[in-house]
Length: 143
Image 1 (cartoon, rainbow, N blue to C red):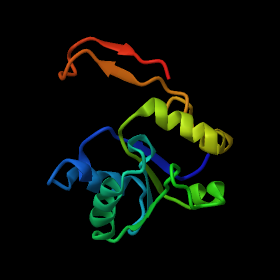
Image 2: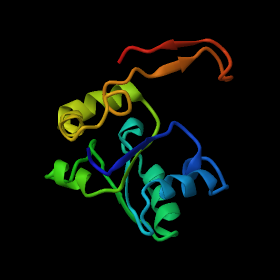
Image 3: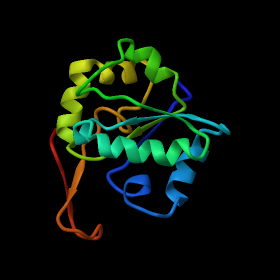
């Protein structure tokens, strides 16, 4: 099992809040003083504005910040790049589209090969809330 942690959020943290508490918690998960953290904005189409907010937040607190854009891919050795990170921060957006792009580029295969549990990374089933309140019924969404 690798020491890289995958964090997947669909809101909150640097993208939506002024409070640094969630981001600070994410940084602490690595156990490193200056973790290597990579933002993966595939689900939002590699939106530059999202990545810029990520860099502003995490580079400003001593993290080594990177992003992995797959819609406009520039990194040739994905496996080495992914495994060099302490934290993979997966941004929110269109999950079904993200999974299709990950499969196209082999990200799913890399994660499986290195022991990431499917329930946390690649083959999970996203849920959709029936409203804006998490206490309302939920249903599985097929990817």
